Image (cartoon, rainbow, N blue to C red; front, side):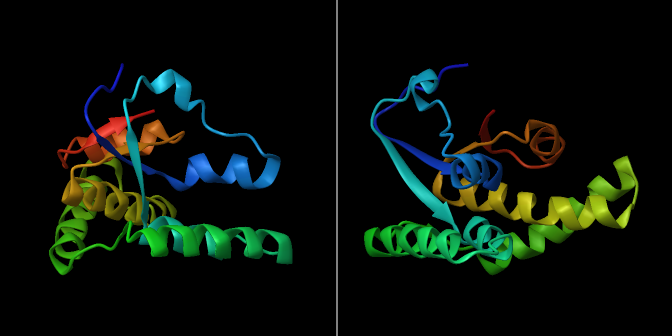
Length: 145
């Protein structure tokens, strides 16, 4: 799949940032075929990244990342209506795939990321395609993985 447009808004899922933070491995954006990508940060993603940060160097890196997106005005925060829709989508996912607590708690943040991306017309880029494809059954958003 290629994504072509002028410009393309992009939100990386947490699963894209973690390999970069842990090992310096970046997502191969050259494979995306994007013309002039405009990167945004989901408030949900930055929260998840901080929640998993246990050392000073990682926190400093995240502070710089946060400051960069904040200075650019490129944070996407879920609207109240996204929280409402998220609850409805999670209920549907639970009905279809089961109400296992770990599944529903894990996927809640991904639903909010998808809805936030839809809110601004952005593409979600993820290494966690399995969960996002389940979400896509109930939410119309752009996905690349």
